[in-house]
Figure 1 (spheres, rainbow, N blue to C red):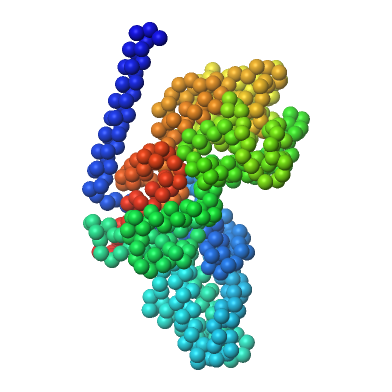
Figure 2: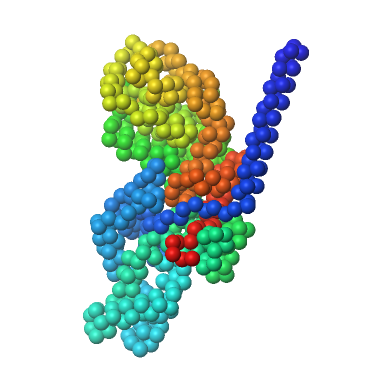
Length: 552
């Protein structure tokens, strides 16, 4: 290297170090400003999703019948099904809640009666006394907080009324069934109702109670109600202490239920739930892809889920690993699709892949086949997916006069056929944001399978990122994945997506401090996914709320 080259390299490194220092200083200043005030942003009333309802019923009753599977589908916003502002209760859903409550009460009231000796023996006077403790304990678990004395009296009266509705003059089973039905249809069961502590600590900002924090922890990390350890911590009023919140979050992340919650996030963020229904609905051209069969989409989804689960929980993966890992998880059937040797059974195992071809979930076939056509790859859809899902940038909507895509032409590559987009001024405005990214995936066909040529023609997988913080040219999906993994915009996008999923709402301007805290914690942990999840439990947006109007 010449002295001139060495001097240029030294100056470049120094400049980059200055930029990094400037960013760190800016972040420190922002954190300093944030520490002076508490701003939790909005705290909307959150209804249980279908997943949360089923999980809660299982934890509450040991019932695995998944009654919410028969409910009307949850509304979605931003790709997530837990966004508070769209989770309304329609008349049909209200009717579903009624039917589920009746069926669950019929199924489980006899068991509860058998566990109260005086009620099981038909000792009316003593049963009426002993059932109060059942109401207190069941109500605390169903409402995720202790019942007030007024509520206790109301449900006690309801039990007494119900005892006269069964067979014979006195039926404890009918009484407990009526209490269960009422509780399972109560807003305090179906919603996560939060009032916060009585006394504001900063303007109209109030701390959440330990009971409310316990529910926030459990539904964020487990998609279900608190366990006994959280209830006991809430009983001791420990969950207003950040250290105790962090302790519980780390404990919870070590359980199998946390894996399901993390899987649920990635299913929704990346669109994994679309792989089977959309591909099966559209199919794949049998002449072009004779190897395709309807069992593949399920395998593809399971691969990405197993990969993320393994990377996050077995490898303590950082963001770069998810984007660029040179391995995946597969079983024998999927190994046959890939054309590699490896597992011989049905269980998914780690398999090393060619690092010059494959990079994390970015090159896994499920997402590539999903964002492809039945008869070819699709640079448009793949580029749009990267722009929208990984960079949090929504391309402008297409014009009304979009021309029909060209027919498959075996004398041209897909890239050559779609070159019209850059030449046509009607198309160029939108497609210059998507196609140059999507071209990087052209070594993967419409099934998401690696190929060296298309119709025997050489493939050009060069592409370019624009309107990002890592703008520039790249060649192939591996180089694209490396660029995306280093992007601050991608890292911020991941933080935003976890914020939306974790808090059930979109971020607002007044959430700036909570977002800054999350980004700082994520960076400090070298972009470890589990550390970001822990950080979600320690922000102002998680621990506080504005007092409800009229409270103060």
